[in-house]
Image 1 (tube, one colour):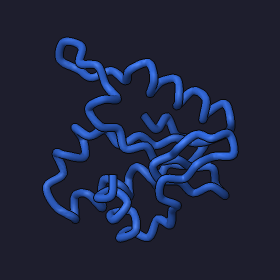
Image 2 (cartoon, one colour):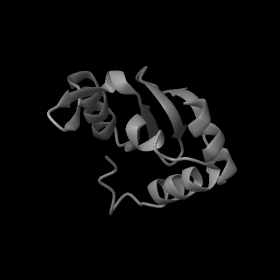
Image 3 (cartoon, one colour):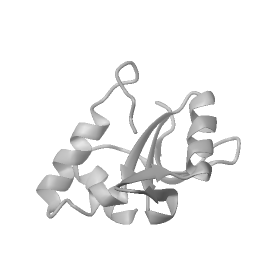
Image 4 (cartoon, helix red, strand yellow):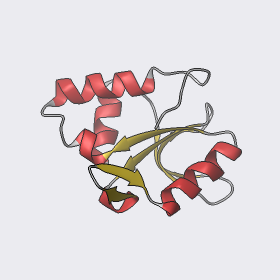
Length: 108
């Protein structure tokens, strides 16, 4: 999570670390004014189903609640992040994820 926060800072994406919403929901990294949340999802956020990973119920529920409150959620799955071998690939990955806007974002 801190590695992702460091990379976000490196690409100039200002954020609050471990932000807590007015409703008491914890977000890994957020731009509260824009209501954009970044969730770094480790292994405990997934269930392995055959050859793919599926978000577990708790993660899906939290995402649903945040979306209902008007947040845009950008998920950073650990298996995608771990495949990035250096700062340049991390930066490019995060640039791609954070450049999506509210109208075009599925952000999963």
